[in-house]
Length: 311
Image 1: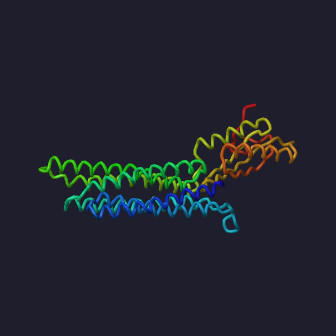
Image 2: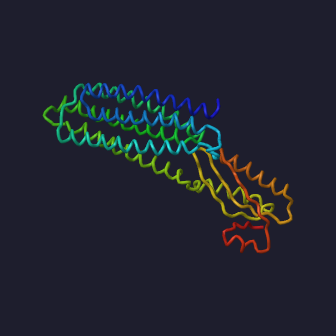
């Protein structure tokens, strides 16, 4: 199965599971009058929108380059992740508003056992689906799938938190009826909102960073420089290293300084060897190398930015 098909298949699984959870949580939340369960239904609703966006993104990003998108469609994944993050912020705000309203005007939660049941089902389902999303996301280097996976992994913990809160409410009202425990449900909902905001910030910051063409992580650039350095003495030095990422696609370019007496074919073979080794270490990499002759005034020409190798 190709990477594109694997990404599409697991994105479809996320859409189906979130659709079922939205309906189940909403019905139970309205039935028992629990704002924390309803907030979790909204959370799953946002996850469903995110899953749909991820599904669209992974299908679009897999399209080959065309006349209007000569560098491919990889940034659709980054764009989808930034949209998902914005949607989560909105959902967290709504949940916080409803929770504060219920703290001010408390009301009883009817038959909380149903809430505990649906939250348990939600946690188990999302644990399984998020594991699949993370697995395929890492193997295909898909930011859209990783973002969707973090959505669902957050839902696992929030569902468990809501189930715990409802269980405490049920036990408290059963064994300590003189205590007023109506505050537990909205306080748990506020905790859910806090976790959602944290996940949203992480997703949004990472996706926006890549949309702004930030350089590859330091450890990946170190791999690149080590590979180029290993070509000494055929390659004398390099400079003007530029890197960026779009979805799972990496773009790398630099100037390579070679001996001035090398033939064009030999210089070309050196570049091919460097490119092959970089792609082996960093999948989906497009490498552009500009060769320059090493002259007597090389250091001055590179203006101090040339990485000179030890000989």
